[in-house]
Image (cartoon, rainbow, N blue to C red; front, side):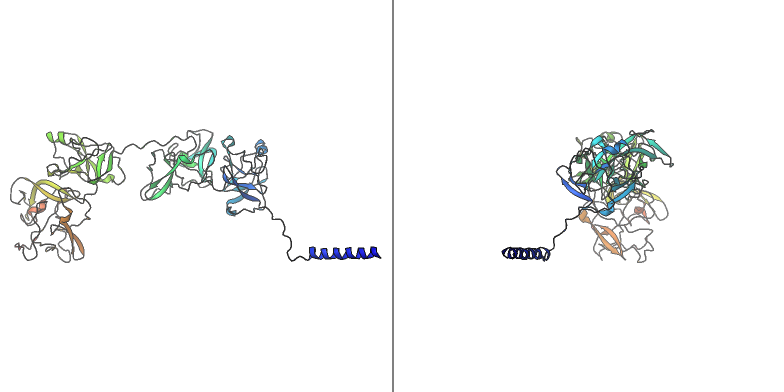
Length: 546
C-alpha cells in the first residue's frame, strides 16, 4: 500500500511538471537562419563581404567583363561562391548582386558585376589571406570607391577600327592593369593635361559627352592603390577626381563594363588608362600670357614669368607709336604661341607687324609692352608714366587715348583739330571704350540730361547713346565722375554729368571724326580735364542739329 501511494505521488509530480513544460505562456524561439551573404568588420579592411559562415569572399581583377576568367587549376585555389537564395545583412543592396553561368556550367554569384570567390588558403572564418595575391585578388568590400582591373586593352580609333594594345599603348597582346570605378568601368587620363589642370573640357561642357569628367567620394581602395595619390580639382564649377595629378575621365563610347576602347581614340596614346605605375602628371607649362592679382590694380596681364604688361595711350589706332628711344624704355611684348590663363579670351589677342618689321602682341587692339624700370616680376612702376602708360588689365571699362583729333564736317571734309577743337596739329587726351572707340558729349546737353536723342531713337544711329558696366578704370580717371541716366527706358553713361555717345561714322578704333561734325566743337571728346556739365537752363548753346 505504501508503495502504491509513493507511485501515485510521483505520477502527480510528473503530471504537474509536464503541464508546466508544455503549457508555458512563452513559446521557445527557433534559432535564426544566417544570411547567405554577410557583412563583417575586419580590423584591417573594415567592412568585408563573407558567406553565411563568415568565410571571406574575393574579387578577381581579370573578371572585367562580368565573366569569370578563373578556371582549371585557378578554381582549386579560388573556389567559386554561389548562393541560390540571396539573403543579405543590413548595409548590402540586393540590386548589386547577380549571377553568371560559368563556362563549366556552374553558377556563380556576382557583386557589382564582380564574380565572387573563396580562397583555399583561408583556414578559418575571418581569414583574409587572399587579398593582394598576384596583385590580382582583392577582398570583397561594399565600399570600394575604385577597383583595379587587368585585361587586354582594345582601342577603337576615330574610324571605328579596333586594335589590341599593350601597356605602352602600342599594338600587341598583353594583360594591362588599369583603374576602374567600383563597377569595372574604365578610367582614363588625357595626355595633354598637366598637374591638377584639365586642358580638355570646354567651359560649357559641350564635349563632356565624349569624355565625361569623373568624380566619386573616396572611401576605400583596393590594397594596391594609395589614397594619397588621389585628389580633386574644380572644373568650371564641377568637381573632378585626379590620380597623381592627372584628371580622370570616362569614355562616352565605353558602353559596357570592361570596355576600354578609349585607349585608341582618336589614336593610341592620347587617352591612356592609369594604374599603380602611372607617372605623376607633368607640372603645367606657364601660359605665355597670365592673369596676376595685384594689391593695387586687381587683375593685371603679365608674361609667363609674371612681368607686368602695359598699354600706350597713343596707340589708339591699334598700331605702335613707340619707336626709337621709346622702345628702350618700353620693350615690345610678343609671343608666337598665345596660351592663356583662365579668364582671358583668345579672341581678344592678335599680332601686328611694327614699322621696324618686328611683331607685337595686342590685347583688345592695344599693343603690349614691358617697362624697363620694372626690376622684378610683379612690379607696376610704369602705370601712369607721362599720363600715357597704363598697366594692362582685362577689365577696364574705359580707356584713355592721346592722338591727333581729325574732325569730319557735314560735307565730308576732314580737318586736324587741337584740344580746343580749333584747326591745328597736336595730341589730345580723350576717353574711349575699352577697345579704343572714341566717346563724345553733346554741347547742348546739360547735367544728367540728354537733349539730343529722340524718344523713338530715330537719330540713335548717328549718335548712339553709350553705356557699359563700370568695373575698372585707368588710374588717370576717377570712378566718381561717372554715372548713368535713363533715356526713354534705356541706360546712358555720363561723365561729369555729360551723357556719353559714340559717332556712327567712326568705323574703326581710333577714329574721332565726330569732333568735326557737323562742325567743330558741337560734339567734343571728353577727358580728365573736362569741366562738369552745366545745370539745366545754363547752357548757352542753342544748336539743335546733328
